[in-house]
Image (cartoon, rainbow, N blue to C red; front, top):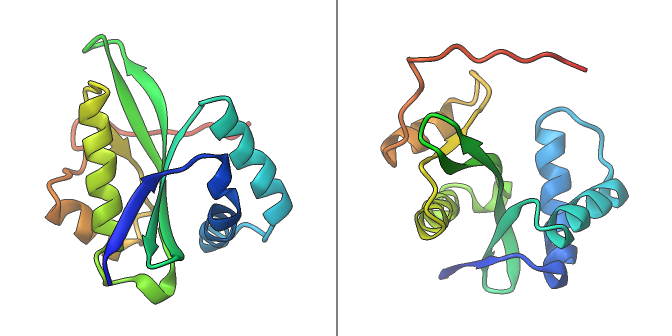
Length: 148
């Protein structure tokens, strides 16, 4: 079955919420579909993120969400590919690649200098796909976080 990827609008929220909730659970967060709905609607309505949803037929099977930022060094925009998720039933079918292709295409279209992402060190299957598609791990910078 063909994979169709389309930009998310508020009309897609019912299809997106279960995937987003499953994504959060993958990262050991409790299920919270009502809160997910509010969060996603705010991002979409305020144009604070760009989300693409992948469909196989009428079934939503994956999504990618990117947040805009900027690079002072290049004086251009960058896109932080913050969320990428494929339903377990659709893994290995090309959905992840289709979403990554769409993210890259969108980045080129808006003139972004680069896309950037982070994933857990243990998520080796995702890392293999990223590297196969031309993403390179950062060796120039050490990333740090401060929990607030």
